[in-house]
Length: 150
Image (cartoon, rainbow, N blue to C red; front, side, top):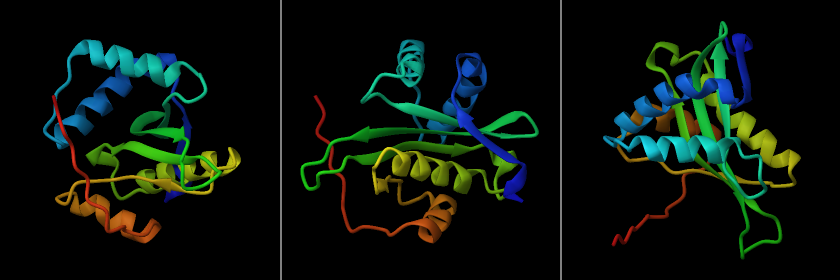
């Protein structure tokens, strides 16, 4: 099943398909962002600079069907950096074929290659299908997230 999935770094020529996938991801979380944010995000993902976000694309039969964005960052509780898997999305037409799992495993492999032993991510309570996969791959933590705006 997962053998027909290719995971590769995001490329400049992916802009249109990346935008399509990220728009669908944001819609799942009932969010819309202005075009300027899309441009800035894509530029950051392609910058190649240390400490900047990175992106991966999942392809099936040459068609982009999923994406993930991640960030290596310092931590004060350990000497090693850690990896935050920020966004993970698989097109509904490709779900159940292993793309989400392959994207998570690719981020974990990239982190390990960089000397980073752990990755972490968050999701919303209502993301039941995603959580079914996450429960197979990782340990759920008891942390609660707070936000203060403005």
